[in-house]
Image (tube, one colour):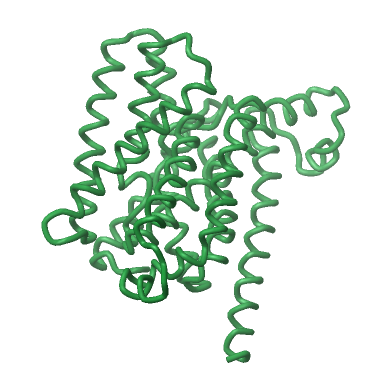
Length: 336
């Protein structure tokens, strides 16, 4: 037993180390690449030394908070997806497929349009409410009539996503003020984010991540099936409610700051489980690292789409994630 566990522990440690190294390199690239190019050596020299130069100002006031936001949101979305795939025992489950992102987006847009004087830290509560309603609606539709299947989940999720997106488009079209900004946000973007946005999302991210880790054992058992989890003394209903609340917090806070960035919560947990196994004590932190990595790299790539203008990072994650979704759907929703 010990001999079997050692290779797995080594694989987990090696995967985590590789992820952290790549994340550090992607962070440096994010601070370096843009309309104003800064070489890697200068970035490293100015990262912990704001000498008042133009390059230092760009790094500390524009690119560093943007990169930090990207890493936080990428980690939150990956963990939210991992939780959803555990409590539904469905590899297609994710904040986007489950209508969580669309519901949060609708409520944020309504808040911006109907109550334009609302403070940003208040809009996050609108996002929480929308995420809860969107997710609950898809869960209800997908789980009725013989139980939830990957196909039913996908159909219910896409239907609710399109329905809510249509309402959002209608609201935006009837409100011509700041339409361009809202449309850009709806595509999912982290450009222009500042340290205020970091302060807004970070407390919710910490609460969600810490609570998810505390539930990691229960999530591992739940991913094995309801019967197994119930036989081992797990209170399935309570775990699902608590875990769903964490998804609302993690995904809702992310949408409130960066818009509905899709597919990270779908791809990363599936890939991580394929590499290191299904123990959520390790799946969650490794997913967080690779979720942060994917969003950071995607953000760097998005800068080249319409260079030197900015493009939403959601475009890149969709280009990467859509084929992965089709791959899972083609497998019949079996775990990757």
